Image (cartoon, rainbow, N blue to C red; front, side):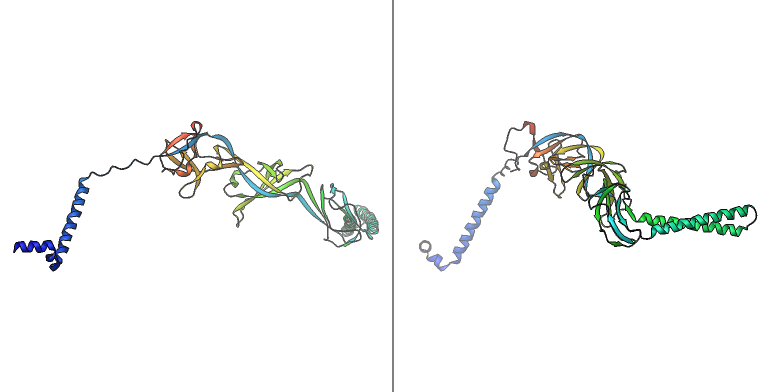
Length: 376
């Protein structure tokens, strides 16, 4: 019997009749194989970690702070120190113009003449009346002193004399107004009348500007207004790069509600009147002296929050310092708040962050090593 079963098993008849037995044997073999694999894994020692990530290499330069004046740059336009719009003070016809548009004039120079009309005859008449009233007053005063005339008659004579004097002054003033003169030295910017024009009282005649001094109006941020004083010196640079010295002559004590800035005026001498009004100007104001370091824009970097600053080295560790700008120049910027001496990363700062340990190479000792790159 047993030999028959063994021969059936070998020939496969037994498995054909009992297929479930094949599945059980297969599962047992698979379980045994997995168990042996896990056992081997436990017996093998844990793999040692790979080599540690090397530190980034950066280049740095040592900077010494220097005494530097903090400054601000303001922008504005030149304007005349004085500007007058001359108008007719009496009605009449323009009989002559003495100047042309653009001419330079001096104080008291005649600009135009207005027809005097009958004013000369009025002046003669008022002067004659004044002479009579003066004689009448003298007579009344003599009679009053001798007691032959009362106080009322004397007072009436005095009032008549005073009125006659006023009439003469009025006519003389009208005659004076027929001659339009320059109130100060300047340039005739605009001439609004021609010979033969009729003008009434208040009609414009000419515009006169004084260019011997120029004024630049600018606006100062509220952070700086307390650092500016009246008569403080300023450097003014024009669009052609020419420079002149000026001084602050006015400081507003009330800020603009829309811009929150304060208006100032800077006065610039212009004795030869070579600088025109209305040109763009940059005003440079210097503040207190501070210790600052000059760096190039390439040395500036951003931290994780987007703040602009420089990355310094403190015992081979990166330390980010936000910038405190003193002044900017074409070839660099001056920064304060870095101490009297500081090591600043000049190459590789884009690959390190605040707090990172690094391998620092001084710029003077750098030999062209190409490993100043990011950490692998």
